[in-house]
Image 1 (tube, one colour):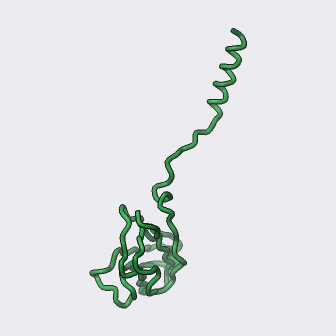
Image 2 (cartoon, rainbow, N blue to C red):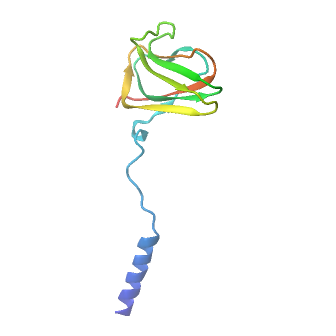
Length: 129
C-alpha cells in the first residue's frame, strides 16, 4: 500500500509540473504566411498576379503616414474600383496592422500607393486557403 501511494504521489507531482502543449497553431500560421520586402515608396507590382493577400502593416517613420493597397499591376492605375484597403498611422514610430477576415485574391497583382515616403509597408501573403 505504501508503494502504491508513493507512485501515486510521484505521478501527481509530475502532472502538476508539466506544461501543456497546445495543439492549435496561431490563426494564420497554418497557411504558411510570408512577408513582402519593406516598401517605402509607391511601388508597382509588389507581388505578382494571382497572389492571395492575408493582410498588411504600415510602420510610420513620421507623422501621418498612409498608404493604399490595390489589386493592380501599377500603382498609377489604382482607382477606387481596385483599391483593397487604406491604412494610416498618425503617430510617428507606431504601426497599424490589418489582417483580413478572409484572404483576398489579387488577380492583377499587388501594388502600393504612398503619397509621401513617411512610412514602411509590409504585405502578408500566402497560398490559396
